[in-house]
Length: 543
Image 1: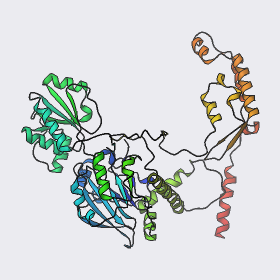
Image 2 (image 1 turned 30 degrees about the horizontal axis):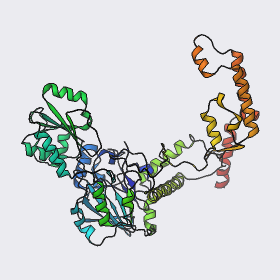
Image 3 (image 1 turned 120 degrees about the vertical axis):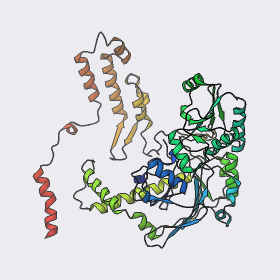
Image 4 (image 1 turned 60 degrees about the vertical axis):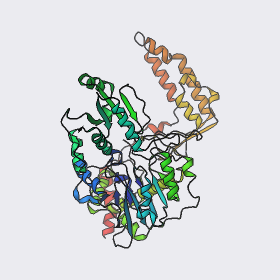
């Protein structure tokens, strides 16, 4: 499952991102809500870093993930909270929580500090009442808006949740003799279930696990775990399938309703898909951005932002952020327990990694870990900066509800999700790997091709004469060897003779660009030599 979280560049702040090793400079972690795509990597073993969230989310953290109480810090909504950004109390952060109108406990975070003002929406369904929040009415200029762009498709129209709820009620009324199955996720759409229970005066049957969540949320008493006690039953969306409908209809006529913003097509006459969404529609996002007028917008899901929203942004260049020295030291500091464990792991694994010889270097484990940490933190910041700069033109493969594809932009898919090295393999050498040996000809190669390994910095240069030699050897060997198709068809009755195989291998070895010396074995240094070599500097240092 993909994670929808962000590391805020130039700050020790992280939202909905729980892979600590990928953000070593982060110190304050914030959780918008308890949906599983926002808690990837967060488990009961979490330690050494505080988690800030709403009181409802804090209860669900204890119930569902068993996170230790000492690391959970619930914050009340609508009130500014001061949090330290260093160890000496010089730099502070003001954070205000705003109801995100998404699911129980979901909030937006407004961060204010040396970096300016950052509004992180998380998953949210926009409502005009949000703009009346005091923290957004005090002439606050939003420097960076991290925006939930799940439904950011101008061509997809989504009704309000009130209209979608009315559509669900009409479907239920038109099937008075049917039991109703509602497909939902583990958390969310509780308001819809309560309204349906009140409207049709029936219990809503749920699983035991969901009942525990409902009791923690202190919802109205309309839910039960007793099978058959009510006409409406809430199940996981994944359970709604043809086989399940067949079994349900054997007992009683059953109708399934899937309230979702996903563009699903019903596969069964008794399955109804209703566009009920807990995410903002494109028009609502347009209204939200137009009202806030942020300097820049960073999409939370992927990197694609429609041109319509980008056009609403001012073209003023964002000011450069200067990280105070006390905050830098705070981000560099490691918890004592983690520092010891990291240093130990580094020493234990050092001999397992092949490294280039560089003489005898005496570094303490703490300093070595500090260096690797600084490099990782700088790389993380650079990666975040790049994602903000190209947010209008890039796209990535993600798992969100509505995948936005701009036909005017020619996309280059990258399955690894990472940028490729600018030292690319030449087209000629790439073609060699994809063409069968029997299809190689002289015209397919350029005069020179260079292959460079970015890690070992090894270069291999191939000339036209070497390629021609390679081609001639392959052609000669192919005269004595059957092609792949004939080998496959006749493998059961006949095979290559041993002499033919050896001749083929010898012809191939002639094309290897290595000398005989490269294959000579090299012995290891004796233990006495290594011992003498490593102890002598220590002895001279002590003298």
